[in-house]
Length: 384
View (cartoon, rainbow, N blue to C red):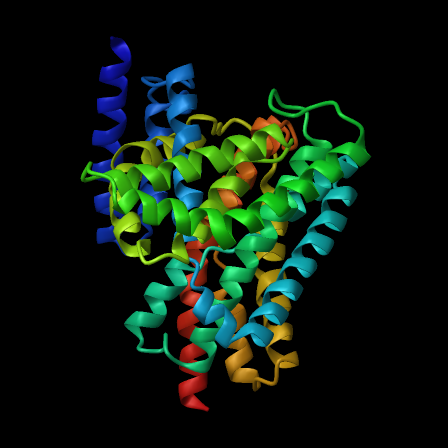
């Protein structure tokens, strides 16, 4: 029963460090990562990457991606479809291309360089949204475009990630099927996603409401989440893509907010903190000084590629320079999305252990720098 003590220690530490992070104006996820570093082999050595931690972490990332799908605002996407798509697509192409080129020059293999580019294609705008709310700019043209682009960015990232894991991955869940068969299976799975979003999810959620148990709607939503995640794994794709689109499907029903509250309470109370702690448990400090220039250059590239790429997309959509600057800065933060991608790639052996800690550190740095970039862009717009 020692795992109960380990779980209690993880939850206590993440709760306290998340509190102090928020008090300092830092995202709670950074506190949870620090909990993993503090408790893990890098410092105290009290908690190790056991099977229990791995299983809880896997459920945590599936629930986290389900919630991301639930909170994807399709109405906002439809309203700002053209600028959102331009910003997201160019904001994915630029970092993937340039970071891939940098990684190849640094000596990475083709597969590892491709995956590193995919990692920094991800965007997490939760922090940007908080800054925009604080400065009363969320309802502006730039703020609305950021929200629309974030939906497209999430969809593009999980699709590219899943294809990369299916084609290049060598982890336990990856099959050795021929490439053509893998691609056919993935196309078939997207057909299943369409059926679930269009017909199956609304029918099942309505059916659940008519059942007697109080939590029937929540249970049905979790069945969709876990079932879609399992099917994605069977089809040779990452389980997170199934969870994400299950969230998108449930979000199109009248039960969206009820499910968001219930599943969020389950996820953020137990499983999601363990997922972020599991990332910290894999961190090591012994190679960071050796990789200092790699960290510095990758951080600069991560900031510039999103800022300039998304800003260019905003300019192409007809925005002025000040608005494009705000959009570019608002898409810089990598946050939990990049952490999810990095961990999945690490598990699929697409990200080498020697560079794992350095990549996580760069993700943290971009997440901390992003709010200052947004505030600076808004101040320049107000001064213009």
